[in-house]
Image (tube, rainbow, N blue to C red):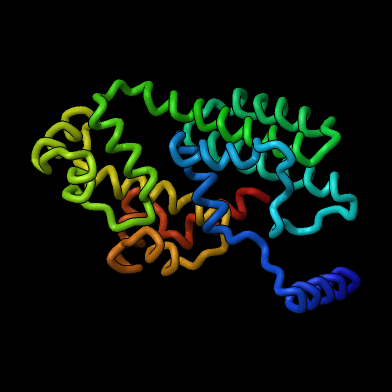
Length: 249
């Protein structure tokens, strides 16, 4: 009962002070950018963390009454989430967890908020660069690398072959031919594959509804999203979420 009372009081205070935590969508965009090796998206955000006298995010919750400890807790959670997402996207488990340990050890001995945030910025850049190198292990031409980077950065958009080709200043037919030749998939299949992988992350790490996820990734309907997801994983989104949730216990 004490926990329920404390929860009710905190929610009351947050409503009174118009306080809201950082939205999951905002967090997710950054985490997914790291996991997909999207340096161009991550670099300016990391730069903000690494500025002298940077302060903690104003929408971070209170995990400790000690301000320095509060920022440390958030930094540890931040690194842990990025680590797990990178493992899910192909980084070797032992490499990822050892790298995480190194950053968390450094965070633990920090004496100022700006030192902690600087290390968070370093972690962002380091994990993103390593994931970018994983992407490059498949040797693609520059146009295809740019196409893949664009797709990863715009998964929440209504991506089309024509729009991507225009962005890269290529003809649709040439991009389609080159993409299929180098990746073994046509570009539409690749886009759906990447959107479904991102949807898996949301199913595992958020409480977003299935229709909201379908809409977020611009599937034409919830039923089409469920059909694509089941074809790719052998499970409906509901079954996938439930099986992984129970598997974690």
